[in-house]
Image (tube, rainbow, N blue to C red; front, side, top):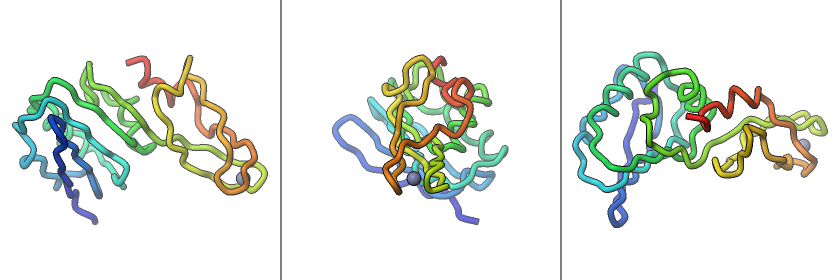
Length: 153
Ligand SMILES: [Zn+2]
């Protein structure tokens, strides 16, 4: 088990928080509760696992975040799935700026997680992406309407 670490760094009025490890019943967000920041950016790229207790802890923590603007960045697939399924995992008004999406390449039979910005998605359609291994066009490897559901929130 890899306990969650919060890596903080402040630039101007923004508090950047990198979450590293597992979000579960042992995750402790108390060090950032009540942080005074105009903006908070949560970077999820190094979250490896989240379970139902972790989801509960996260939502409880969000209730205590006092910031005008909250952004989510670099969300892996496991976080996108929670955002799509769990009411309250992202608060109304928060912005999801970027995330990873699953793609599959038939040419070399490899799966890859491609980093996308939310503004690259139009009408819940996956953008064209080249396979990072061979350069051929890769196919989006999930159901577009469900995976991009968060964009309508
Ligand atoms: Zn390929």
